[in-house]
Structure formats: C-alpha cells, structure tokens
Amino acid sequence: MPERRKSPRYPVTMPVYFPQFEEWGYTDNVSMDGCYVVADLPVADGFVTDIYIELPVIGAIAMKGYVQHHHGPEPGMGLQFIQVRFEKNQSYYYNLYARFIKILPRFEEIRGIYLDMVQAGELKLLSLPKKSKKIG
Image (cartoon, rainbow, N blue to C red; front, side, top):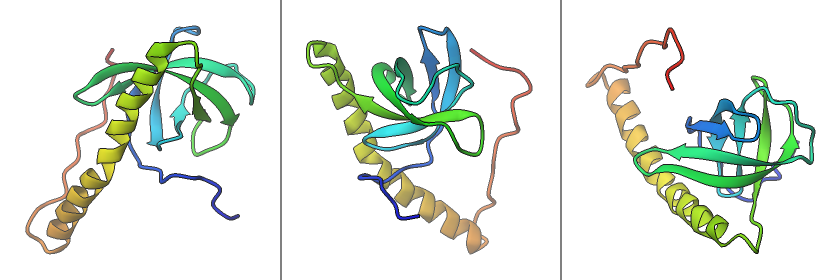
C-alpha cells in the first residue's frame, strides 16, 4: 500500500488525556498532522475529540483530533489534528506542537549516534524496566 501521509512520523511516546471521557492513553507515533494514540475509547471514525498531550519539557497542550481510523498494533486510533478558527488558543497550541515536531529529526540524529556507539561496542544499550503500576 503506498504511503499517503504528507509528513514524516516519529516514534514518540507521550501521555495523552481525553477530558470528555476522563480517559488516559499515550501516543505511539506523532507527525505534524496528527498522531496514533493507544487508548480504548468508544468513538467511531469521523468523531472529533479534544485531546491533551504532554510534550516533554514543555507541558500539556490542548488539541482537537478527527478520528481517521482504528487499527494498529494495539487498541487505539489515528487522529488528524484540526483547528477551529474561532478558538484562538488552538492556533497557539498547534504552533507549540509544530515547533516541537520540527526538532524531532535532531533527536533521531542523536539516537542514531547512540545506536552507532552501541553497535561499535562503546556503549551498552540501556532501557528502563517496565512500570509495574500506572503513575499519574
């Protein structure tokens, strides 16, 4: 199947919250146009929802997402971000999000350097153990 996305996706995990459902989830990947969120919500394709995303270092931002699809490695949904013209703060939040997305290629470059050093035997690939209980 040919790639239909307009912008690259980055494998970034960030906490998300759906205020109208009082439910938590997390991003599996993000792009300039949207994200895939792992969450089990009773919404159909085409549903528009509010979503709070916790950007690392920056803090939580509020976005609106249009549910594009429900399929992936875990229960979740692909969201396309939308802006409502009469809600001025949405443009501000989206601009913060866009600035965050624009720096992700630099993080990928740094990760590549790390993995090269692991491959060369200079470093050991580390990962944190899985959390035993939900925090937050």
